[in-house]
Image (cartoon, rainbow, N blue to C red; front, side):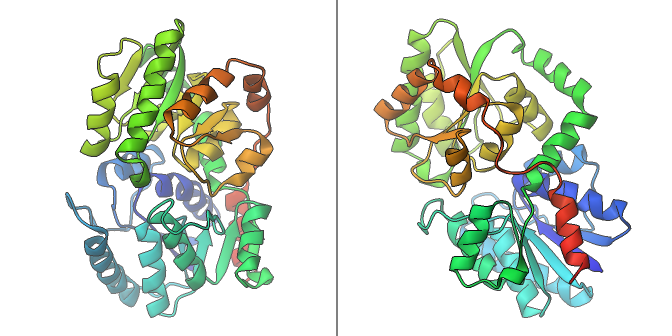
Length: 364
């Protein structure tokens, strides 16, 4: 079984790394085609997991549009697939690299396995373009590795054959547990580096396109109001490099003493920040899956989530981006709701997703 794994962003690399390592451990021939859709952030993860891509497309260009990225990706991936004879292609999640990797595989009549399949918000512009990327990938894929029962049900509603769906849990839990097991000393050093061991803080991340402008401004105003009223609470915010995000965040929180604004951090550092936080506020999808394994409640800064399992399990709460609602949600975390959320069990798996995916492919 000769497998290609196509990915290009940090979240994809985090979630595919444990699967790649498990394949190599079992003697399966696996090659990585890294699109480098996000160059620096991708490299950080590859270094952490000690992975070297077999192909590096280095596709990222400053200010490129989705259309430009799309046309360049499909051409470059197609060239590799025509040269190599892969038995299957594995892609992850919902990025442009995911969709274009699937499309190139289809053009070359290579079966596609979709890791983290079946997530849906049912709104093609929220998140954008991720919701449509994953739907289109699901249409092309032959094998669907659903992280949860809900994700499987979504696929069945779209007339995907049940024999081609398997529930695996999410590989991000595999990755998180690997890091906790292998890098604990590094995690403790990172907490000292950022001087956060003795601080009570909320970890913030916010970067999605649909939140640019007024939504992120409203959230920052709510945060500013809250930390000015709460004497002991700080925030730690690794601010995305996009100028649209940075300008808004710095304008509202830049002069706040209890707002620790830092540049984006490597995955290992982010785990340390999560581990030491009081709770998390985010518009990220992956964090909703990781946080419960560390006992961290999550307030989701979005109108919808493709991970309703977190809401149902009580590990996360969908709070939107309106200033009044965000502030009120932060106040509610001072009540028994915090304890309830921090003790809820993780619905996204137990760290054996990679093993289940490999077993499924072996049986095909």
